[in-house]
Length: 443
Ligand SMILES: Cc1cc2nc3c(=O)[nH]c(=O)nc-3n(C[C@H](O)[C@H](O)[C@H](O)COP(=O)(O)OP(=O)(O)OC[C@H]3O[C@@H](n4cnc5c(N)ncnc54)[C@H](O)[C@@H]3O)c2cc1C
Image (cartoon, helix red, strand yellow):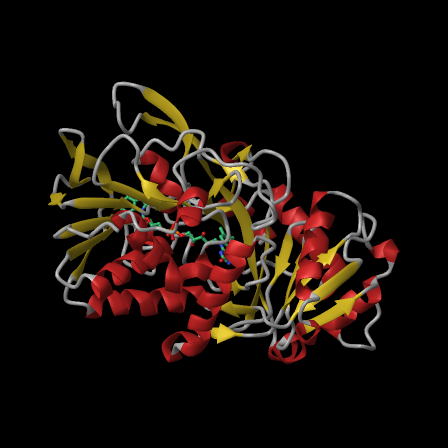
């Protein structure tokens, strides 16, 4: 059993990994001084953890994530400050039925849910899939209106699944951190580099020249992490397309109780109306933004890596035309009323992806007193209430060996369906990016 002997910790990043870890340390080791540093004040507008909605579900094929997600979901339900922003409306998983890895993921999910038939609704035909959203008398979109064969063919809904207001819950976590005397925040200036001495980390240097010295440093900088530490071959930062459409009061009434609806074959994800709008996204292969930067450990060497280009750094960026077309193609079949409606706004949501979709929660191998918690891989948000406890266990050297192996600082195998994403490689964003100043009419 290790011990937590650090008097001070600096955490880089106020997303789910950073905030959850700050609270876990404050609760278990109240004498340790914690400084959370972020480029901006939470909820950080372009942080991956901040969005109108996120899915909370425990129906993982992987038994480890299934158990952890169930525990985290109970925390959302039992915590009165969080449950205000938690909406248990189920999640429907649809497929085109074509053989392939996504159908396998879909089938495994169905086998899992069948263990508790009371939470399962099956929709075996395109009509049933469509009517689950639009009501039992609704007629599916005629084939002649579609530009491709039907993709929304068979589905099932898990009534246990929920969505949350991700931004409001991050705000709750930020306020909780502020209420702890041992946690302080340093927001608005990015960390330029990790300070090192004799092979140990000793805090961070901010871009304005200020140093924050600490016994232990945690990198929880999400998709920006490859700027600060060497993650070559372990994670890739890329972004997927998200769009919001305004809906009328009548549409809110009509679709208000629908489930989150996702198509594993097309990667499309549609949320129920929330605060007068519907969000949709696609778990596409996505986009990367390759830049040349000094190697984090050896600054005389220049490396190429992908780092976020966001609505904050490039406020007029819109999602690429092909991404918009793919979202609209899905809407045309499953939500035709919205297929040609102007997007209220769009964004590329950045994420840091490991090959297996397993996180990285581990000591940094070549520098002592430096720890890493990243690699959220498009599915880490739901673990917010519990993930910090595991990061702390890892810092102490007490992490359950199975988890330590799963979240090791090492290359990983293939994703077994924890966070299914469309195949293919991320494309270079600068070749596809559009600016709203020249294309606002298309919004
Ligand atoms: C479109 C989309 C949908 C998703 N849907 C779901 C879902 O439904 N359910 C689910 O469980 N998960 C989902 N995820 C995944 C989940 O949102 C992420 O895994 C999680 O939010 C990652 O959190 P993080 O703390 O690693 O990153 P972030 O929230 O990005 O936090 C990192 C922070 O570090 C800060 N930072 C970076 N560099 C520096 C620096 N140099 N100095 C100071 N601060 C710095 C940033 O400003 C940022 O605030 C989704 C992801 C995306 C993109």
